[in-house]
Length: 331
Image (cartoon, rainbow, N blue to C red; front, side):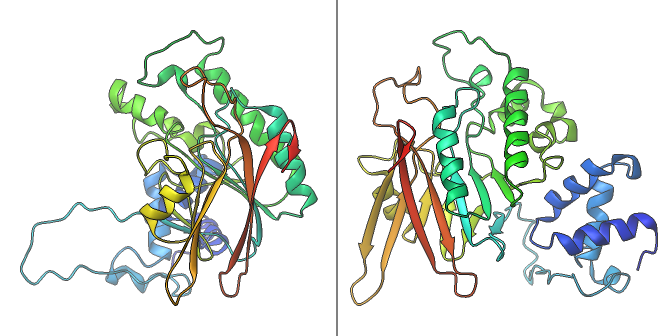
């Protein structure tokens, strides 16, 4: 087992962040201690070692306490290598039992009145975690869509506004805060992929590093991760194509066939489907916290809203309060 100061530091992070994916944890450690390590890959190798993911021979060099079981590929027919990447799974920590879910702020076109109402309501209800469910940023200026109007801000202004939002959240809430990007947030990575692919993978150009998530103690969850709040699946919603139909929650239920909640569609809706001789499955879509009259669709059925999800840490059962915000009031 490594006895170096760096090894002890990494072990401390591994102990305190057992639910974090290895790459996410490595980024977190590197962002806080850049002077101690060459790059993220050096940190990642050590984290993999402590988690028992660096091969059978190396397992004996690390404590067994945090080593996770690694599935070795069974390949008796010598099949060629498969490049399938398993989808990341994230589970709400058991200490988070009452979570405020907000989404679709589209900074810098956020609706401040609606956001303040959602946050105040969360405080009144005694939430112990906040989950930002995608489309925190808009990135209109680097989208591939036709630009219908000039904007008064620059990308640097948009990023700074987002960091100010994080600073405000952390000043007012001491609870865990989680952020998973949506389709608008990843426009930056798509832009780099087309315009400057050489910069991809460079830590200084990763969204969580740019937004200084680690500095504000905000856990960044990789894009399109499967997020479970007990028995409830929480998605941004962009895995479904289209506008969600007449009732986004109904469409969601037909697609996922399980209890699920999403944002993305900017509309508050719910749906249920009873199984014969069984329990009913339910789905919810939450409202947005941005302008209700965006340039691209000024006539719409969007509404402001958010949700509070209560989770039983023992059995995973949950309760959803999916609320609308009208003129700053909660309904």
